[in-house]
Image 1: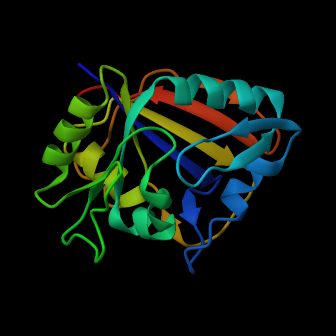
Image 2 (image 1 turned 60 degrees about the vertical axis):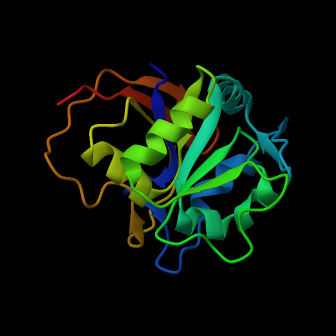
Length: 197
């Protein structure tokens, strides 16, 4: 079965955004080095990261076949120009936004819950992994037992408040396996397998 992998940058004290939804501090590591990583997609970006972070990103993105996220992340990213760099994107939402879906876009909207969204993203991933963005979406997947791995980029910053990654969890404690650890410049990349409840 296609695995699901939560992918999130987070401050050391557990926040993915500041109180105003700003993410600059937790994403500073994307500009902390001299190795260029090009994302592709409709709205391509170029990251300049350290060599360890570049190796980590290449390995992670090469295994992805689809993405799953929430409406808040979709809105903040401007819909990725209609095509996410890491495969077709499935957006969990109560309402499809005005002007969507768009012709030629690989962004799909799922209005019937997280289980349906995961099922659709797995089917679209072509045997590769499904990456999951967004604190709320990751929490929903954890709570529903639908997450196979946590991939957290812990930025070297303390935000003190804001949007927490692990906030509304049920059925805790959640057991994790031993991590894979990669030390980058200004970031520590952690990958934990999630053990079934």
